[in-house]
Amino acid sequence: MAFLQISMRLKCLCLFTIALSATLVADEMILENFESNPEQRWRYVSDQVMGGVSTGQVVYAQQGDVTYAHMTGTVSTENNGGFIQLRSNVAKGTTAQVAGVTLRVRGVPQRYFVHLRTRGTVLPWQYYQAGFDIDEQWQTIRLPLSDFERSGNWLGSAINPNSIRSIGVVAFGRDHIADIQISEVGFYN
Image (cartoon, rainbow, N blue to C red; front, side, top):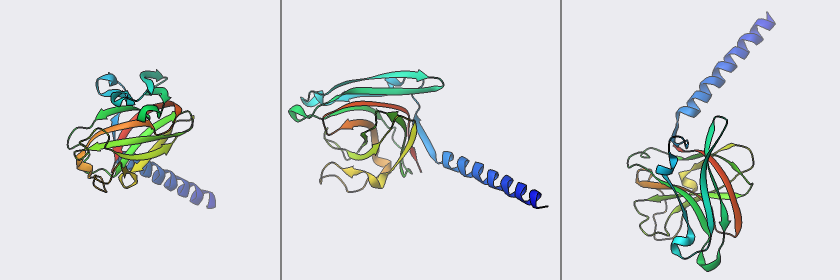
């Protein structure tokens, strides 16, 4: 009888775990998984657009059943520079109810950033930024919108989710060698 009770409890626990996992996945909206011509939706940008000297590149690759963007480069703060970035536009109305950004990433262990641009970030150097650390294993990162900091006092203190217009994965702010792989970019509710 005790064995039967334990078995029933394990079944209930398994069903609860499956239901919880389905709920966690259901509240994510994957914007990109880097399949089907991602180069048409994503662009590489460096500080060279404003006179900086950082260099890099993005290549799209596949390993097994995982497709990803691989951004590498040298970030230099010389000449008022300091970034390389992979960026994509976000369709109007896509993010009206989101609470944060989700990424699936791996790479050389160090800090990277997500930059969000909104209707209010009209100048090229304006953005909202949140940092995250990666390691060599694939991991899912969740960044609540409340963690994003504005690049200057002239921006609103909080992000209006409905105003998000672009998202970028950025190696930023210090002299270093960047090496990050991104297999998913999206938002969560």
